[in-house]
Length: 456
Image (tube, rainbow, N blue to C red; front, top):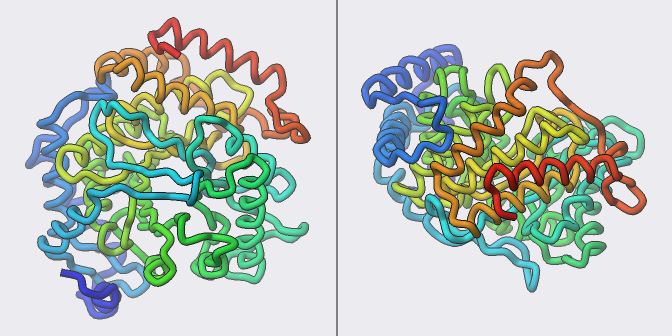
């Protein structure tokens, strides 16, 4: 049992030594053995696979993996071993509501169930997307002003006052504080000053994270990232982030970007590692909630079939075995002013909503360019709310997802992706409204979605 986070940091300092290369080989070997042991496969025609037995087997495999391997302390090359008692304690403490924000603008997130009768929380934004300062505030305002949005997040400033931001430098400190200043301005301008946030996205290192920790910036009612690296690793900087929350109070969002097609193999093995990562993050990240953001080794986007399947089955696994607030990222291949972006958002939103996850996005254009806007966030929210309102089943949702895949799957193979246009082209940045062309595409796709069976 953990009585003090220093217990964990001490294990990172004194645990059994192992090289990074040997750790990677260990993950490959252990995961493949568990995939074989539990007979884990996936049907590519069932993105939202209503299969309780499979969800349970994936959970058991993930729990067995983390108990067997522990977590790799990357900065020191040591293994942090975790006991079954600690894992169970971590599971127990996650089954609770989480309040974000303050006052009339506060939002309570609950662990969701499969085909839940309550809509998911809509956490709007593109966390970590590199964003020039000149469009940063307008970008955030484009989604913060949307009525169905509950919470906000943002990209990462790449420059401040014309100076490029560099990791670990003074510019990172200034960028982190500047970001939070802009976010406060946006909340006030849209009339929701108490809205909760996932922020300090410009803090690449713990320097920026510590700099942003102030009641006028990153408030105790907000959250920040505490990341694990793929696979099942954490560094000293993120352990400092976790410890920083203990006395200040902001929520820790664990993030493990498990690779589909990486060390764990295809989607079933990656799902096992995702389960193990969440169970570990309860302890080593002091997680208050989890972010589920698988990355396809070839396609990157969360809208790739294997990534959507992983988000769905992992949410189901936790809903059945270890209820927790899980927020799934929506990071499509396409960018603004493309119909494919809207198809991807709709498919990804359905897969998450029906499976028990909350929604965060949209990190358009693979999250690599600031080509995201509030309009696709609006669609993400509308699809989620409609699916819950009409009591859509997993099977009905899967049918719609497969039909949408036929409309956008080709962009996953496109050299250079399908980045679309910057928000400067998609919105009038003075009025912060979508240009007519972008609104027209949105209306066209929404009509197609109605035809497919979504009752807006």
